[in-house]
Amino acid sequence: MNLLPTVILIAVALCVILELVAFWLPSLTPDQEKLSPYECGFDPIGSARLPFSLRFFLVAILFLLFDLEIALLLPLPWGDQLTFPHATLVWAGAVLVLLTLGLVYEWVQGGLEWAE
Image 1 (tube, rainbow, N blue to C red):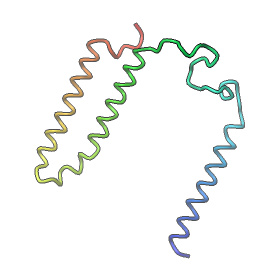
Image 2 (image 1 turned 135 degrees about the vertical axis):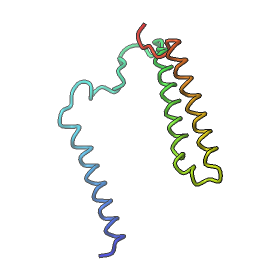
Image 3 (image 1 turned 30 degrees about the vertical axis):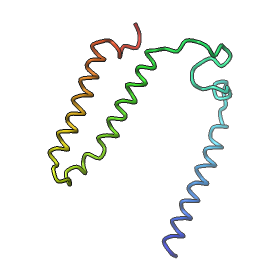
Image 4 (image 1 turned 90 degrees about the horizontal axis):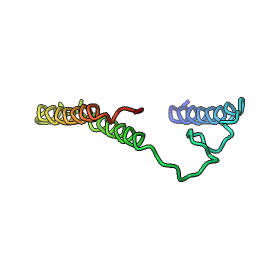
């Protein structure tokens, strides 16, 4: 048997099995939370004009910032193949130092405290 049809057959079979499990498994134990239209933790019956927590927004922005840091540092192992690998290491270190100083500043200012 040829390799390409085998790989395609396995991929299609795996997709079909995963789809069947995804449709079958959640229907085993439906409860009130799963049947509600919103699963975000907010009451779907109340007003949509409730004030939004600024602390939650700040923590979410900080999470995105450090997630972006990881994305910026992912190509770092391939930097040693450049003409000047030490410059790549210096720039990556500068990014890490800047983000660490920002994290320390937020910590000292109390921006990471969830409850007052």
